[in-house]
Length: 295
Ligand code: PAF
Image (cartoon, rainbow, N blue to C red; front, side, top):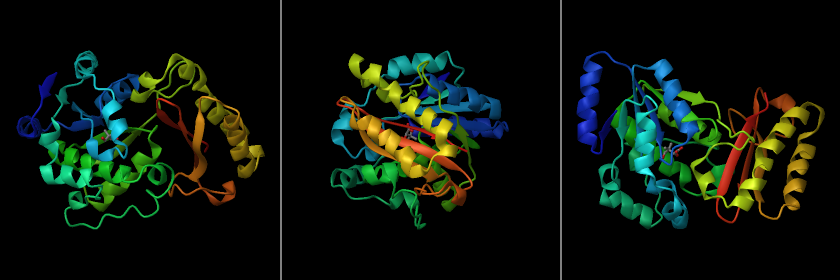
């Protein structure tokens, strides 16, 4: 595996590979890698000749500075895990390699930077107004900003994202379409711990007591998947809300059943071709999300 810290070196190397007609797969990450990320590398290898992984904790997608500070940074462990996971190229840039001082200043002043759209009027419509978008103002603009920058540097044929961040996937697909980027976005299944907890870099911040309680998140989602055909949506929401009303360590932020295309909450399954149940919970140390595709 080759490690690049500068965009210039990365671009030169990738240009050489492209001249050799190699196809390029890309898995962007924020590091603190786990088997969920490694599954992206594995799937990328099934699609492409060369796999690039980036590790970059993106400051512009954090709406809470404390969350950015606390985000785990484990580049040495990440590098060795990638080396043993068949990754070809690791791109691990400094912040100054990705952002100009003006862009960082805008973030510090809480101004939404739309320069990444490069003159196009990218509009996510209602996609970024619900769930994560409603609870984390500016988050998806920061995600789209960094992903568009990384896409321009790597210029991959295909890019691989985990379905755990279901809404992020929709935003990125929409961005690629609106920016007319010739990149195929591949959605990869959620990887779970044995007890069902969706793998996440944030899980390592859970206290032992919290860790014992969090499998309830996926257990409830699977339960909802088992019973959704025979219960009205209102009742399904009550099941989850009532469970967390009695939970001491976990606070429910939202539980929504949404149309998989529009991400808008639905009240009747007959009106949607496909639906997904999405949840976000807050604990003292961390905030977690998960989802399950109902049909
Ligand atoms: O999903 C993530 O880890 C991040 O949001 C991403 C896509 C790497 C952008 O920083």
